[in-house]
Length: 403
Image (cartoon, rainbow, N blue to C red; front, side, top):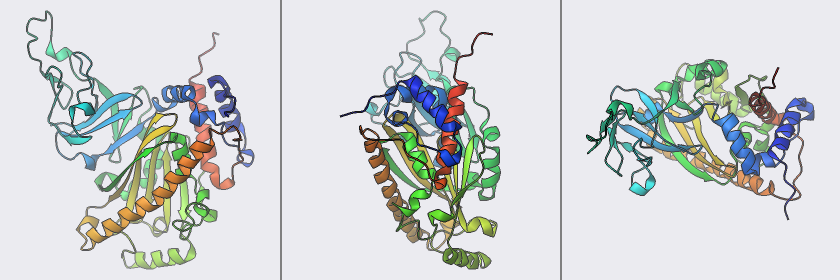
């Protein structure tokens, strides 16, 4: 048995109403915001495509021709480093007949090195900046000019070493939207770090299920009670006041872990984990910093690493997730690096398995005829911030009434 579904307009109104409540009265959004294909299509156009979505870190594409093949909201894209060293996000759609030049059916990998991109259909070839290089047997096409036929670019920006795309092409600059965010993570010099762990997850749940679970720490006392809550108790976590385009949360260590960290910081020594990032203030070493660059850029800072999540919404009940760990180049020269990398990869996988379990369970429950809209704890304040962001973005999409 299924419940009666709300229309997209009704769901929008419910989001507006929820966002207008004070935190002390906050409630969850209606299930349709997570399970309805009509609302996902609306949200993809009005929120996701109009924001910035993070696709890569510069360390993943070091050499000219290095590329990543990604599909973002139905758009076939390739992130590629050009001969000039610049990073670009290009459409994979050939301007000749519309074929996806890197479609998986052609046998290419999701990543690789291709200084020249070649469409297998008719062998049109393109430079890494999108310019058409070769097009066999087009000499009889009247008025044909190679310069007019290139792979279409998407608007892209690099911020602290992360490559972002804006599909609509009209978002404010990343640095402007994430100004305070950038200041907060500056001590880590993320642009100089290296991605050393990558874990891929095919997720059968809505993208908001993922970001809401990730940014609130209330669930430490539940699903993470044996992994994270022992060192970062849920009750000690807190969220900064509303920032607009990003959310910042603090996950302080408990007394025992804090003292051990302070002692290690005084000796510039590692605890469990990688060699620490140099120059961090002690108060930044004794907590995890949790950030959500809205709509879906997830970043975590710790004394020895940055953890970044690439989240690509795909449908109302599906998203693709890559969880990564970045460390300093100095950490990679440590004699114990190989053993540390193995242990930290296992740790990252273990606590993410817990998240994947509860996210899948939540998506399943949201389809029930008995699901209700619950109340939020004060420890779930970040979810309230997300609701308010969605409300603002959806209201901006409302048609203007004639004067």
